[in-house]
Image 1 (cartoon, helix red, strand yellow):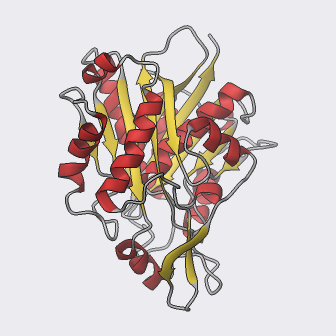
Image 2 (image 1 turned 90 degrees about the vertical axis):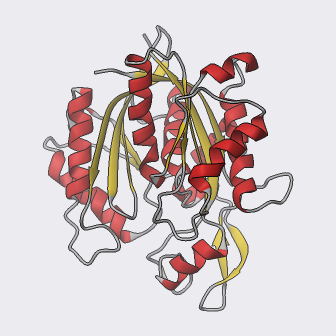
Image 3 (image 1 turned 180 degrees about the vertical axis):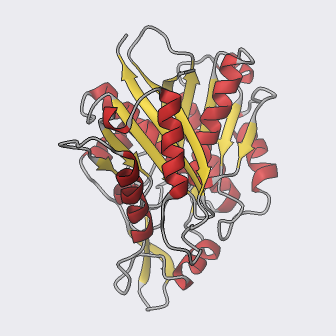
Length: 339
């Protein structure tokens, strides 16, 4: 086991522009879905979770602004002259996401650095795996910390589904929640960040297990759901953490309203949990902030970190799991430690 600890966080959502405000709103179940500028096929306004930025902007600029906000919050306690020694692992939408900006992989990191007037360490890079990007980023961070000896690694994510090129595809495929469709999600946007390092002797949330796999029967396939990919990802994460499913206290997931992902999560649990638990809650922040794409996975860890520090989590041992539409599955075992 090579644990990595969460040193600080940043979070921007439709219900709050900092980790503290967003997590407080999510804790109380506040949602801020509003009408977008787009009309669906049924003639009704498409609802969405939009981030209230000071200046109106779209496309690449919007992603850059949100990313810069969470990075500034996350690195607030690190002197600016030390930022250039920190690698930035930037999580973005998967290649298959509808309406994805063509220049995302090449330009976003450059533009974020320009916005912040800083150049991060040479091992910085973009991870284009959508909601599961956070698991890849944590895996890379573990390598950088334990093998390359880099003391601090910054993980950030930014994404938006609130463009017509994206919404129109989901709308045509009947995936958006609306009066005529209860089996759908409310699109959103946001950004989140984590500063990670080796654990120290203070109260910290730690990532102690990571598992990644692929699901052939993904949401766009016509194969029956077996949850093989998610099951394997969870088992791998548990083995990495040296624990069993019944040792965990609660779960947090990126499910955002579609029956497919709820069924997958339930099926995976039934295949792994071998001891009866009186209570095993599942948190799904998307009910407050919407489907935030690549930002979802990082935001989940920010939320768990806040809950653990504030004493309202469901226990010290947590399973986070996430899934991407193309079939990638990931699971992360988190542990709150006071020593």
